Length: 219
Ligand code: E4P
Image (spheres, rainbow, N blue to C red):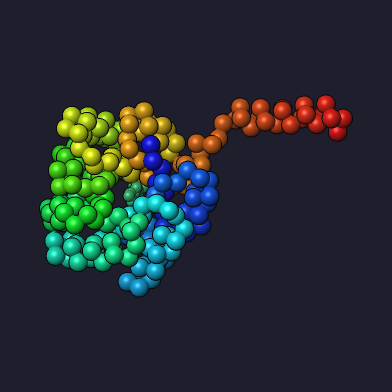
Protein backbone atom coordinates (compact mmCIF):
# COMPACT_ATOMS: atom_id res chain seq x y z
CA UNK A 1 0.00 0.00 0.00
CA UNK A 2 1.33 3.43 -0.91
CA UNK A 3 1.59 6.19 1.72
CA UNK A 4 0.79 9.74 0.68
CA UNK A 5 0.98 12.67 3.08
CA UNK A 6 -2.05 14.96 3.16
CA UNK A 7 -0.58 18.39 3.76
CA UNK A 8 0.89 21.45 2.08
CA UNK A 9 3.35 21.96 4.95
CA UNK A 10 6.86 21.72 3.48
CA UNK A 11 8.56 20.74 6.76
CA UNK A 12 6.13 17.89 7.33
CA UNK A 13 6.49 16.70 3.74
CA UNK A 14 10.29 16.73 4.16
CA UNK A 15 10.03 14.83 7.47
CA UNK A 16 7.81 12.12 5.95
CA UNK A 17 10.05 11.89 2.89
CA UNK A 18 13.15 11.55 5.06
CA UNK A 19 11.50 8.66 6.92
CA UNK A 20 11.76 6.81 3.60
CA UNK A 21 8.17 5.64 3.34
CA UNK A 22 6.54 8.43 1.38
CA UNK A 23 5.03 7.62 -2.02
CA UNK A 24 3.24 10.90 -2.72
CA UNK A 25 1.60 14.10 -1.52
CA UNK A 26 -2.00 15.30 -1.65
CA UNK A 27 -3.02 18.90 -1.19
CA UNK A 28 -6.33 20.69 -1.41
CA UNK A 29 -7.33 24.37 -1.35
CA UNK A 30 -8.01 24.24 2.41
CA UNK A 31 -4.57 22.76 3.13
CA UNK A 32 -2.91 25.43 0.95
CA UNK A 33 -4.85 28.17 2.75
CA UNK A 34 -3.83 26.68 6.12
CA UNK A 35 -0.19 27.27 5.16
CA UNK A 36 -1.03 30.86 4.18
CA UNK A 37 -0.39 30.20 0.48
CA UNK A 38 -2.55 32.61 -1.49
CA UNK A 39 -2.45 34.12 -4.96
CA UNK A 40 -1.88 32.26 -8.22
CA UNK A 41 1.90 32.75 -8.42
CA UNK A 42 2.51 31.73 -4.81
CA UNK A 43 0.34 28.65 -5.21
CA UNK A 44 2.28 27.58 -8.31
CA UNK A 45 5.61 28.22 -6.54
CA UNK A 46 4.44 26.13 -3.62
CA UNK A 47 3.53 23.17 -5.83
CA UNK A 48 6.99 23.39 -7.40
CA UNK A 49 8.59 23.51 -3.93
CA UNK A 50 6.73 20.32 -3.00
CA UNK A 51 7.85 18.67 -6.25
CA UNK A 52 11.45 19.59 -5.36
CA UNK A 53 11.21 17.71 -2.05
CA UNK A 54 9.63 14.46 -3.19
CA UNK A 55 10.25 12.02 -5.98
CA UNK A 56 6.59 11.08 -6.12
CA UNK A 57 3.09 12.04 -7.25
CA UNK A 58 1.84 15.43 -6.02
CA UNK A 59 -1.90 16.11 -6.25
CA UNK A 60 -2.75 19.73 -7.12
CA UNK A 61 -6.43 20.62 -7.09
CA UNK A 62 -8.18 22.73 -9.71
CA UNK A 63 -10.37 25.59 -8.52
CA UNK A 64 -12.48 25.79 -11.68
CA UNK A 65 -15.75 23.87 -11.66
CA UNK A 66 -16.74 24.21 -15.34
CA UNK A 67 -15.40 21.88 -18.04
CA UNK A 68 -13.38 24.47 -20.00
CA UNK A 69 -11.97 25.98 -16.82
CA UNK A 70 -10.97 22.59 -15.42
CA UNK A 71 -9.25 21.66 -18.70
CA UNK A 72 -7.36 24.94 -18.88
CA UNK A 73 -6.29 24.94 -15.24
CA UNK A 74 -5.51 21.22 -15.13
CA UNK A 75 -3.45 21.34 -18.31
CA UNK A 76 -1.35 24.19 -16.87
CA UNK A 77 -0.89 22.38 -13.55
CA UNK A 78 0.17 19.16 -15.29
CA UNK A 79 2.70 21.09 -17.38
CA UNK A 80 4.42 22.41 -14.24
CA UNK A 81 6.11 19.13 -13.40
CA UNK A 82 5.68 15.48 -14.38
CA UNK A 83 4.98 14.64 -10.73
CA UNK A 84 1.78 16.71 -10.73
CA UNK A 85 -1.50 14.80 -10.60
CA UNK A 86 -4.50 16.99 -11.43
CA UNK A 87 -7.05 16.77 -8.64
CA UNK A 88 -10.57 17.14 -10.00
CA UNK A 89 -13.81 17.24 -7.99
CA UNK A 90 -16.48 14.58 -8.48
CA UNK A 91 -18.94 16.71 -10.42
CA UNK A 92 -20.36 16.26 -13.92
CA UNK A 93 -17.85 18.54 -15.62
CA UNK A 94 -15.12 16.97 -13.51
CA UNK A 95 -15.91 13.49 -14.83
CA UNK A 96 -15.86 14.81 -18.40
CA UNK A 97 -12.54 16.53 -17.73
CA UNK A 98 -11.05 13.33 -16.25
CA UNK A 99 -11.97 11.54 -19.47
CA UNK A 100 -10.20 14.29 -21.47
CA UNK A 101 -7.10 14.24 -19.26
CA UNK A 102 -6.92 10.43 -19.52
CA UNK A 103 -6.93 10.72 -23.32
CA UNK A 104 -3.98 13.13 -23.06
CA UNK A 105 -2.00 10.94 -20.66
CA UNK A 106 -2.46 13.44 -17.80
CA UNK A 107 -2.77 11.79 -14.37
CA UNK A 108 -5.86 12.64 -12.30
CA UNK A 109 -7.11 12.22 -8.76
CA UNK A 110 -10.91 12.38 -8.52
CA UNK A 111 -11.64 13.97 -5.16
CA UNK A 112 -14.64 14.40 -2.86
CA UNK A 113 -15.90 10.88 -3.48
CA UNK A 114 -18.50 9.69 -0.98
CA UNK A 115 -20.25 6.80 -2.76
CA UNK A 116 -19.42 3.67 -4.72
CA UNK A 117 -21.36 5.03 -7.69
CA UNK A 118 -19.17 8.12 -7.81
CA UNK A 119 -16.05 5.93 -7.66
CA UNK A 120 -17.36 3.77 -10.50
CA UNK A 121 -17.93 6.84 -12.68
CA UNK A 122 -14.43 8.13 -11.97
CA UNK A 123 -12.94 4.74 -12.89
CA UNK A 124 -14.94 4.56 -16.11
CA UNK A 125 -13.71 8.05 -17.03
CA UNK A 126 -10.13 6.81 -16.57
CA UNK A 127 -9.08 8.49 -13.31
CA UNK A 128 -5.61 7.49 -12.10
CA UNK A 129 -6.78 7.75 -8.48
CA UNK A 130 -10.16 7.97 -6.83
CA UNK A 131 -10.33 9.58 -3.39
CA UNK A 132 -13.10 8.34 -1.08
CA UNK A 133 -13.12 10.47 2.10
CA UNK A 134 -13.38 7.98 4.95
CA UNK A 135 -13.03 10.38 7.88
CA UNK A 136 -15.71 12.77 6.65
CA UNK A 137 -18.11 9.83 6.26
CA UNK A 138 -17.32 8.67 9.79
CA UNK A 139 -18.01 12.26 10.90
CA UNK A 140 -21.62 11.89 9.75
CA UNK A 141 -22.13 8.43 11.30
CA UNK A 142 -21.54 6.55 8.05
CA UNK A 143 -18.97 3.76 7.81
CA UNK A 144 -16.12 5.13 5.70
CA UNK A 145 -14.35 1.77 5.62
CA UNK A 146 -17.43 0.07 4.17
CA UNK A 147 -17.10 2.43 1.21
CA UNK A 148 -13.46 1.38 0.70
CA UNK A 149 -14.57 -2.29 0.78
CA UNK A 150 -17.37 -1.65 -1.73
CA UNK A 151 -15.09 0.19 -4.15
CA UNK A 152 -12.41 -2.53 -3.84
CA UNK A 153 -15.00 -5.18 -4.74
CA UNK A 154 -16.33 -3.22 -7.72
CA UNK A 155 -12.90 -2.36 -9.12
CA UNK A 156 -11.74 -5.97 -8.73
CA UNK A 157 -14.91 -7.29 -10.39
CA UNK A 158 -14.06 -5.41 -13.57
CA UNK A 159 -10.30 -5.00 -13.35
CA UNK A 160 -10.36 -1.20 -13.22
CA UNK A 161 -6.84 0.15 -12.98
CA UNK A 162 -7.93 3.27 -11.09
CA UNK A 163 -6.19 3.23 -7.72
CA UNK A 164 -8.23 3.57 -4.54
CA UNK A 165 -6.68 6.46 -2.62
CA UNK A 166 -8.32 6.41 0.80
CA UNK A 167 -8.47 10.06 1.84
CA UNK A 168 -9.57 11.94 4.93
CA UNK A 169 -7.67 9.31 6.91
CA UNK A 170 -7.43 10.62 10.45
CA UNK A 171 -5.69 8.03 12.65
CA UNK A 172 -3.50 4.91 12.56
CA UNK A 173 -6.42 2.45 12.75
CA UNK A 174 -7.83 3.96 9.56
CA UNK A 175 -4.48 3.11 7.92
CA UNK A 176 -4.51 -0.47 9.22
CA UNK A 177 -8.12 -0.99 8.15
CA UNK A 178 -7.35 0.34 4.67
CA UNK A 179 -4.38 -2.02 4.41
CA UNK A 180 -6.55 -5.00 5.45
CA UNK A 181 -9.18 -4.13 2.87
CA UNK A 182 -6.62 -3.58 0.13
CA UNK A 183 -6.78 0.14 -0.60
CA UNK A 184 -4.00 0.97 -3.06
CA UNK A 185 -3.03 4.20 -1.30
CA UNK A 186 -3.81 6.10 1.89
CA UNK A 187 -3.29 9.80 2.35
CA UNK A 188 -2.96 10.94 5.93
CA UNK A 189 -1.50 13.71 8.07
CA UNK A 190 2.03 13.15 9.38
CA UNK A 191 0.62 12.56 12.89
CA UNK A 192 -1.33 9.48 11.73
CA UNK A 193 1.64 8.04 9.84
CA UNK A 194 4.03 8.69 12.75
CA UNK A 195 1.57 7.10 15.18
CA UNK A 196 2.18 3.75 13.44
CA UNK A 197 5.67 3.80 14.96
CA UNK A 198 4.42 3.82 18.50
CA UNK A 199 3.98 0.92 20.89
CA UNK A 200 4.60 1.14 24.65
CA UNK A 201 6.16 -2.35 24.67
CA UNK A 202 8.69 -1.21 22.08
CA UNK A 203 9.64 1.73 24.30
CA UNK A 204 9.86 -0.29 27.53
CA UNK A 205 11.61 -3.18 25.74
CA UNK A 206 14.25 -0.89 24.29
CA UNK A 207 14.79 0.82 27.64
CA UNK A 208 15.33 -2.60 29.25
CA UNK A 209 17.75 -3.75 26.53
CA UNK A 210 19.82 -0.58 26.91
CA UNK A 211 19.80 -0.82 30.71
CA UNK A 212 20.92 -4.47 30.62
CA UNK A 213 23.64 -3.64 28.12
CA UNK A 214 24.93 -0.80 30.32
CA UNK A 215 24.81 -3.01 33.44
CA UNK A 216 26.76 -5.83 31.74
CA UNK A 217 29.35 -3.29 30.58
CA UNK A 218 29.71 -2.11 34.19
CA UNK A 219 28.39 1.38 33.51
C1 E4P B 1 -7.60 14.30 0.33
O1 E4P B 1 -7.06 14.44 -0.73
C2 E4P B 1 -8.24 15.34 1.08
O2 E4P B 1 -7.57 16.53 0.80
C3 E4P B 1 -8.18 15.12 2.55
O3 E4P B 1 -7.82 13.79 2.83
C4 E4P B 1 -9.35 15.60 3.33
O4 E4P B 1 -9.14 15.28 4.68
P1 E4P B 1 -10.01 15.93 5.86
O5 E4P B 1 -11.38 15.37 5.79
O6 E4P B 1 -9.30 15.53 7.11
O7 E4P B 1 -10.01 17.41 5.61
